[in-house]
Image (cartoon, rainbow, N blue to C red; front, side, top):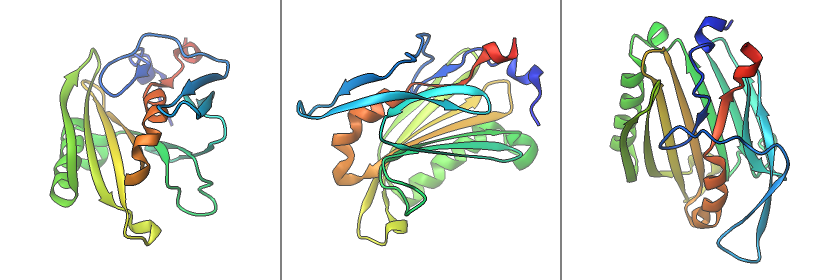
Length: 204
């Protein structure tokens, strides 16, 4: 399903919302204090299989993953997604073969998604494209109706979107929660913005 020759080019490994991170993730639990001094969140490292990637997540959060022929999805959420749609969480999606499957370049695929969002939801902020060695990243911050919860609520969402400059793939990271819960979750999302999709040691 995956060609090792493709992964051999993806040695940038660490990605966050605006740049490529070169530090190593800690493998032991860590603690992160939020803006509220009384609240502490303990983080653990969650593996992102089948590529051996990793991301820090709150110890008491839930983790689910789904894999298909052209994409992998990893969901990390505060609420149990098996019981009802989660409110607060982070979703990572890696899609390959974008141009082959859609006829659109990875960049056009992402930009069309952004244009569609701008036409249908309230945009709070966006960042210009920032090119790295092998990928380019952009971000979009929105308020969107929380339709799946059947409430007159808005989701506050931050999309971090990446496309390969010479490879046919995109990565989408979605961090979100109800509008009134956003500020208290920002410190958690800040920790989770750094992630590793592929452990290159597996492919050496």
